[in-house]
Length: 177
Image 1 (spheres, rainbow, N blue to C red):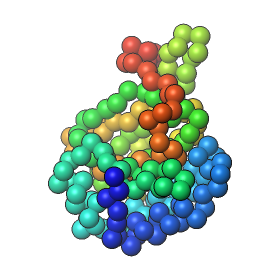
Image 2 (cartoon, rainbow, N blue to C red; image 1 turned 180 degrees about the horizontal axis):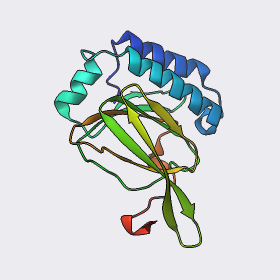
Image 3 (cartoon, rainbow, N blue to C red; image 1 turned 120 degrees about the vertical axis):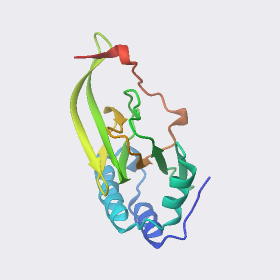
Image 4 (tube, one colour; image 1 turned 30 degrees about the vertical axis):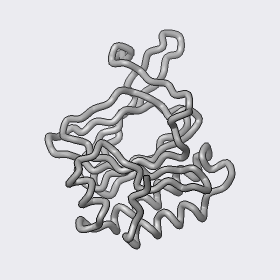
């Protein structure tokens, strides 16, 4: 479902992404970085009275598709992450994702995979606050957490619909020091 937009900043963002999209964009790191830049610009130009911001705060939705591109298959998701929320490590298979934060704070933990033991080890933590956006490339294993009691409004741009994509997911038991 598209909760599309009467928001000019969002319309500009989606049009810019649509215009740069090429046949291999869903797996292309350069496209991921360009979308990251566009998302950051959009986040900085969005005001608290924008419809999707008001809806997300009111519904406290774990996520909804704000826009699905029928030509190229990319999806712009919006999420309300409650305070201290966390998820388990995963990747997006051969596709990339861009995370952005409109409001609040999110930490994205990035892991290194040990194929021999099928475990992951923490490599770094990316800290995002309002206006920040970061791209995770194909195969990068990551998890998100909200490190504060305050919620975070998070954007997640999927370069393709992941519902049919083989992905790696890891349990807490597979995380090693």
